[in-house]
Amino acid sequence: MTYSGRVTVGGPADVHELKDLMITKVAVGPMENNAYLLRCRATDEQLLIDAANDAGTLLGMIGDDGIASVVTTHRHGDHWQALAEVVAATGARVHAGRYDAEGIPVPADVLVDDGDVIRVGQVELTARRLVGHTPGSIALVYDDPHGHPHVFTGDCLFPGGVGNTHKDAEAFASLLHDVETKIFDVLPDETWVYPGHGNDTTLGAERPHLPEWRARGW
Image 1 (cartoon, rainbow, N blue to C red):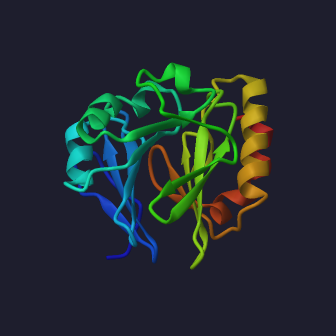
Image 2: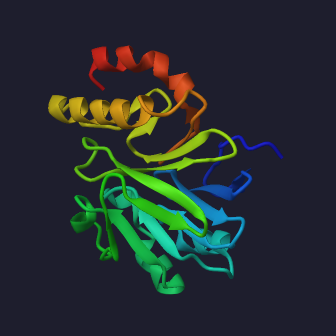
C-alpha cells in the first residue's frame, strides 16, 4: 500500500516504509493529534513521537517489542495526555526540549537542545528548536541516506502555515524565522513533513507560500 499520511481517530494507522526506518502514523484524541512510531529496521528498536492521547491505541501500535524512547515535541497538553501511562507501561526514556520540559508533567530523562542527535537503533534524528509556538518546541529531522529527508514538526509547521502564535507578532516572527532558517533553508523541496495534526505535506508544496504567510502574519 502507498503511504498517504491521511489518518483519522479510530481508523487504521498508515505506515511509511523506508529502507532503514518504518514510520507508523496514527491519529488520537479529541484534537485529532498525530502520533508517530519509528522503528529501526536493522535493530527493531522503536521510538514514539508524542504520546498525545489514548494510551491503549498507542500501546497497541507499539506492540510487545516496546519502545526505547518517547519524544514530546512541545509542552501543550494535547501532546502528552498519554505520556505517563505509556512510560509506565514501557519504561521508555523521556525526551523533551530543554525550554519546554518544565511544562510537561512527566520529568524528562533527556533535555534536548538544538542540534542534538536522538537515536533509534542505527537511525539518527537531529533535533531543531523552533521558538514561537512554545519556547522549546522541537522538530526532528531524519536525513535518509537512501532518499530525501523527513521532518516531524509537531505544531510548528503544517500544510498552509506555521503553528498558532495567538496573534503575538513577536512570537510569529520568531517561529517563521526559525522554520525558514532551520527547515526551509537547509532541506530540499522533496522533504516530507509530518505535522502534529492533520495531513502530511512536503517543503516543496509549502515553500512558494512563505511570502504569503509573512504578509498575513500567521
